Length: 96
Image 1 (spheres, rainbow, N blue to C red):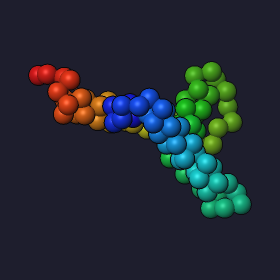
Image 2: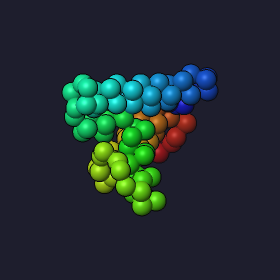
Image 3: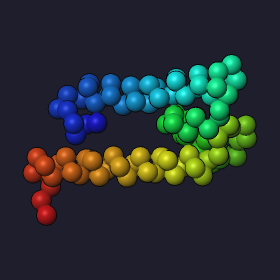
Image 4: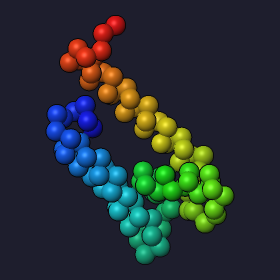
């Protein structure tokens, strides 16, 4: 996000909006009163973080499996790094 705008406030707002903008609808749709599909929680970065943290500390009780959540987080990190590299290369910050 930071490479897409020059203002840090916009980048922070974008990260906040993506994280919680996906978390809230995923939790609502995965709840028993709605669609009752816990797999929708994989769309939420926050739930993915929690699943990996639960596994790291040995805490049980999560609705999603940590290996898939970790894979999703790693894939998102690779995509973000690639997008940042391409953006920086486009504005000629990176040479080569």
